[in-house]
Length: 428
Image 1 (cartoon, rainbow, N blue to C red):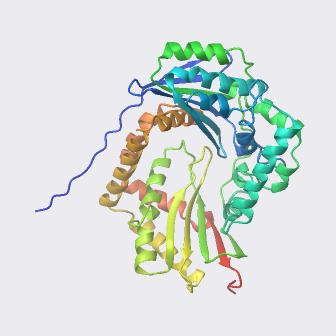
Image 2 (image 1 turned 135 degrees about the vertical axis):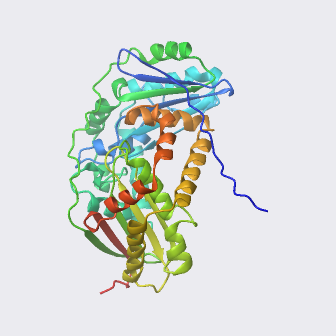
Image 3 (image 1 turned 90 degrees about the vertical axis):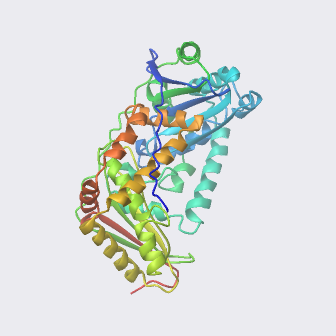
């Protein structure tokens, strides 16, 4: 006799303490005495949305420049590697994050390195030229020469007409980086890379007093600067459906549809996140079962969202089976969405994705690096303690909320559709 067992993953509270230096640097400390390691994470409140529309790609360029050395340290990686550490970074439309992990006894090396490049990053024509070439090659390799590489350039410019989310972190145009001057780069750095625009998270086998001592020693004397104001136009409500057709040298036709959704800090975010998982979160999802396994229209299909600081996008994308007409595939997708809007979801479906989300959050928090990075990102968007309250908000989502959200989001006037067709197959 079989029995159904409901697995409940209890997400532990992530404890931390917060203090602020006189120059505005926010410092968060997460103590974990079960590890010999420490993580030092510095996140800056600057992303692609803060760029000049005529000078895009600068935040991502700095992701590379910040590893090019400072006035006092020619090569960032060398001292960190000698201390047994490793590092990385990433840039989004909302923020830029730099993080490293090393044995806790060598943690001061990380403080030295991060503070040094905050105050005295090396600027010269040679380093700019080196990193500019790296970024330009990345742009060409991943967004110009790669099949479907320009999809999100096109989707963003179609969906956003006013907000700076209309360009990607790599930049809107290659020439913006190719023509970037040393003076422009210096100005960008001075405006955004300073204590008042940053959050420092330290996690590991270390105490709050020790972190405070190191933070004051290495960051306390740096001039504060002015926090990012994010003064740009918000995207107005979309009032008509938009559509674009592209013909390119790709192996299969592809369909992309996206709709405007709420911001990451909106109460509706949690239901929206669960909704995307129900529709297209893996092989057991509704769209995969109906359109891939049963109707054999798509070879793959997924639904996901961009949980951005400002209002983001929910996207459905799918690669078509060879020979399937894209209009037929879109009609079948629309029928599934219409059914979803009319009938909603069952309690079982919703419970399943809640459990999936809960387990993913629990497993993610096992990593010290993930905990530090999450604390930093939550603090930038509003409050690090959201890391401890999110799970309860997911649990509170009801089937009625999912139904209401589906009708709010999947409106024709809110839609943006891209037909990405294999060359010589443009449909009349």
